[in-house]
Image (cartoon, rainbow, N blue to C red; front, side, top):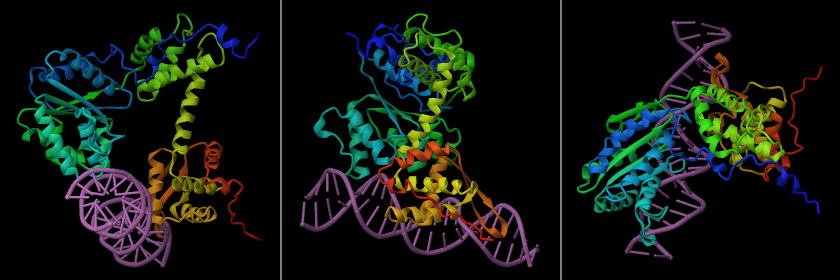
Amino acid sequence: MESIFDPYLTNRKIFTRNRQILQSSYIPDELPHRNEEIKQIASILATALHGDRPSNIMIFGKTGTGKTASVKFLGKELQRVDQKLQNVHFIYMNCEVVDTQYGVLQNIGNQIIADFEHRIPFTGWSTERVYNILMNKIDEMDKVFIIVLDEIDKLFYKSGDDVLYHLSKMNDDLIKSKLSLVGISNDLKFTEFMDPRVRSRLGEEKMVFPPYNAEQLRDILMQRANLAFEGGVVEDGVIPLCAALSAQEMGDARRALDMLRIAAELAERNSDEIVTEAHVMKAKNKIELDAISEAVRTLPTQSKLVLLSIILNDDKGNNHMTTCDVYSEYKQLADIIGFSTLTQRRITDLISELDMLGIIHARVKSFGRGGRTKEIELSVPKLETKQILEDDEDLRPLKYYRPVTQTTLI
DNA sequence: TGTCCACTGGAAGGGAGGGCTT
DNA sequence: AAGCCCTCCCTTCCAGTGGACA
C-alpha cells in the first residue's frame, strides 16, 4: 500500500549517519588551518602536565574563526594525555550564558564538586562564601586547573572585572593547586577598560586568530562534507559557493557550516537527489531570516512594544524617527493592551538593546535648537517582523490597531 | 559667540523574586 | 519566621552635549 512516507524512503539519501558532523558545535579530530595556533596554545598549556602553572592566555578573533573549537579540542587532548597522571582539571564555560560574578563561581564550583549534596545553589549564598568554598576545594584537589572563559567580554561588560580580578588573584592564595585562565573574546578592545592589574594578569600570553579566507573555508567544508554526506550528492559548485559567501562575512566558519547543512536539509526535505547551488542560496536566506525572527520572537514584551512602535511610525511614513516619536506611540500601545508604561529613560535603554541586536539602527544626532536625540531606523523586513510581533499572545489586541496619522486639513 | 533644546547615559537605589541560614 | 544574599528590572535624578540659530 502506498504511504505518504514513500518518497522519503525510496529516494537516495543525502546524509550519512553522521549528520551532526555539520553542526558547528561538533569538534573534529583535526582542525584544518589552525595547526599553528593549536601548537602554540598547546606549548603553553603543556606545562600543566608536569604539574606547573601555564600562563594565562587571552585569545582574540572574530566569530567562527575556530577559537572555541581549538580550545575545546585542546581540552579533550589534554584530558586524554593526562588520564594516567590526573594532574589537570579542565573547565569550560560560556560567559554569554553565565554572565554574573556569582554565576561564574557557582558554575566552576559545580564542575569540580562531584557529589550532588555539596553542590552550590544557584542563589542564596553570598559571593564571598562561594569563593571561599571554591578556593578550598580547588586547593584540596592538588591539581592544575585550566579555566576557559569563552566570550569573556560579555562577562566583563555585564558584571565588571571583579570576578576576573578574584579569579586571577586566586592563584596567589593557593598552596597546593594551581590555576590558569584562558579567556576567549571576539572583541579586541574590551581589555582597555579593565583594571590594569587584571589586564596584565589575564594577558600573560595573547593570541589572535585571523579570519579564514575562502580557500581555507573550502578545506574545512570539504573535510566535514566527506564525513557527513553520501558520495556524489553534492554538486561541484556548492562547497566553493558556501565558502565564498562566508568569506565575505568575515570568514565565519560556523556560518559556512550552517549554510552547507541547511542547504542539504532543504534538498532532503524537498526529496531532491543532489544538493545544488540553488539550495545554498535558499539556505543563506533562511539563515538570515531565521536569525531575525528568533531575535524578535524572544524579545521581552516591553521591547516588542517598543519595536512595534517603531514599525508603526515607519508605517506612517516616519522612517527616521526620534526617541520622542517612539515613546509617544509606545505609550498608546501600552495603554491599549493594559501594560504599565515604562519611563522614557527605560525606553532609551530598550532602544539601545534593539540597536545592539541589529534589529534597528539608532544613532545619536543633534538637531541644533531642535535638541539632541537618537535617530531611529528599522533595519529588518517590516512585514515579516510585524507578523511575528502580532503572533505574540500579549500583543494580539494590537493586531487591527492603526496608528493615528497626522493629517493636515486644508 | 553664546544660548538653548531634547534628549543621552551614568549613578544610585528600590523592590520583587529567587533561595539559603538560623 | 526573620534575616540574609544576589540578580533583574525599573525609577529618579541629573550633569552633559552637538549644533542650529539669534
